[in-house]
Length: 131
Ligand code: T46
Image (cartoon, rainbow, N blue to C red; front, side, top):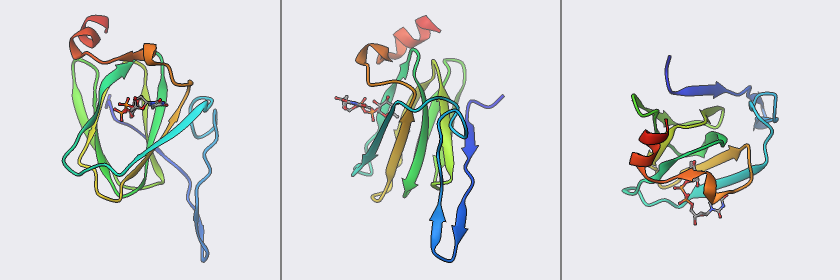
């Protein structure tokens, strides 16, 4: 089974433009407790390089594009996020890295929990020991 779990959101489009509705426990597979967004990334930088112990997240590229790498300690896959009607679901103990940001990239993240630094695993060796 692929590590890359993509959610396709229904696009409500008409002559006035497009609308997408995101709802916890509906098209987002958890209650949404936090939303944050990343923007203004220089093209040659990478972010992430951590896993989470419990957090579930959906990553959506609202504008521009970027690459997300997901790694379960055995396999590593990457996906190019390019559109706001698609979300990458990252559940549980998955190492993630983000790179290849376009100048206009806005990466929005929906999270199942409030921010908690204790939930982060920031050393790859520790991640491998824990899985
Ligand atoms: C993830 C990827 C996709 C907060 O104070 N509150 C928050 O809700 C978040 C997400 C971060 N922060 C602070 C912690 C750091 O001092 O903002 C700073 C930058 O965070 P970080 O270096 O963790 O950013 P990324 O882009 O490496 O990772 C973020 C999320 O932290 C992480 O959960 O999965 O985006």
